[in-house]
Length: 364
Image (spheres, rainbow, N blue to C red):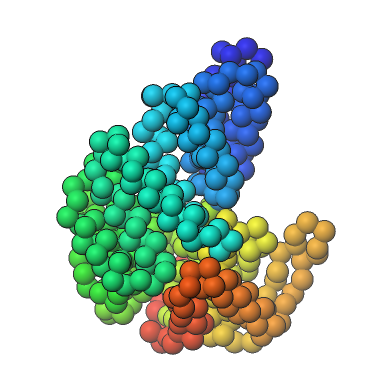
């Protein structure tokens, strides 16, 4: 294959929607670039693989090519036209590292420190650095650090490496919801949702994260609208397993047990190959809550590889999902040296109904 043909394949891969087909196409280009020995194409293909893996539901695969690109950059063998892409991808790497309990916490902190050093060296602002330091502190349950990083984040002007106009406010909304400041979270979201969002992640992520704040503040119509609007944008995206979990919780605490069971059955197979352990933990806990609130029934567990589909008694499946969620939470807490993830998961497992019955008028 000529370099020109490989460049064309790289461009074609970049045009594919995120998912297995794009991952396969990019991996093929990486192999061909390695065989061809063209360092520029090897670098460009790996840069493309980073967002491909992250949005394709396989973020763990991005760790090795990111380290490869960073080493090439430090040797002066990167592509200056892609410098901003490399720096941008620090954010996704930091977020993904935290979602795998087998990754030592010190490693994630070291990557964050390196991100700050490189951003400063390149003349970029600290807005995204404070954002992702807040994210890690919130994961750990370190309220003092999270509050200080949130303050610095709000005080820092946006720059070229800041998250988009929808995703950056979404992070602030998550911080406020975590602290129980629902009214502030809704006020932060209002101007964002009333504008035009063209991000791959939005507005479905924001609307999902507002489901419980809407319910807790009595905005029931807005809650139902958020579920109806956001879930269809997530239902085919395995990378959004954690967000799908929030819709399961919504169904469980609004009396929509039948809807919750339908969603649980639809996505249960994703637990066989979850995008991250953190997402699997949240989904397992949310699924257990649905089964706790729903009447006793059988749940169809999808076939997977050499295993046949099987009908599980809901009590047995609830116990299995509860055990999975708590085991994962324990692994995170052992890694983190805190009790935050276990407390959050136990809160989901024991969540009480917020609304006796919230009509959704849905057919899918």
